[in-house]
Image: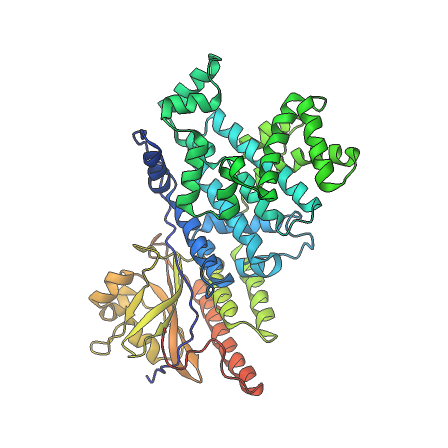
Length: 513
């Protein structure tokens, strides 16, 4: 084996997205306590996703591929995001998107980033035992967000989707609290029902703070972004007209509760008329159709109880979202193969190719853990560049494989060959060294070396070490196909760079990481 010190510098990130079942906790007594519990006990997956997205957006060296890797850590999030991305609302061209990479290219990383936040948020709260008040809050948030986005589009706002997210998350304190509260929530509702306290007064009396203050605290902890955080603050502190759109969205939902002939409704129509220059007739029609749109979006996010509440206001029958379809692996593999062929056929992005290959292996075959690793400069180890499904202690932690020649281990053996390798503990037990077992366990797996100029520079590893489901010959053939596409793509990529007389973009000639 003659590995090179010319590894690809992909600068990709990872994140553990292990599902944690909801558990009963003692209710906190302070604002700090509620913030801590919601972030770390009740909604850790959303916390990780939100913070990871913030890290990507605040680092100029990171972009679309890093965003894709965050999404792909959670299979449920991936499926839901792709389902919503393929709806006419986001994909009017109706071009089928089967990979996260393709969705980012077609829709744009900014919109995908916003959708990821929403999908992840609903994944977190809808796993709880929702109460009537929680569903009311969710319905109002979605309804207000659709109105605010509609007005933003009419005003040619630079990013209507950002307005949508800021409006949806404006009541994040209320939504989160009502999804996970217990006795304190009952006390608040009891005070309001007596008619002696407003909502804010009841919250202050029971909790010592308002749910708007909880929302501001959560927004800061989750680093949700400037417009979200700014819109949660008291209105008098902001002179941003986009913040006014957020609040106008909620004013409309409150006005609609009183009816289309109420003074509140007329005030809202006049405000929209002044902002958009639309006719009153057009505004009235749009406000009515927005309720249907909000109900559809609620169904897409899985908030079907909230969708029912929205539709009941129009006395219409809601069509519930269809159950998630069973994934046809063969069809998915074919569709991802077509994406790979499309990527390779032109001056392509090597990072996009490798990420799509890994997604083909991970989702197309149905694996638990998949990783692309590159040789370290000393040739004694392989360091992760992109991983999917890997359960790790922290966001920064990278999976490292040791390369042992004496005795030969899994990774030395794989890099010494030129073909895909299917090690099995019963047949290849001596290759599983203690260090290997500590990192990957002692499972059947697939390994394929990745080459540059016929020299191994890294490998692709995948297994079902979490579910312990058996691997098949059909799985192995699919793995070989996708891994070969990575090697073919690398060869074509280098040829294209040579023809153009350019150095290899994305190749770290120093061997640094």
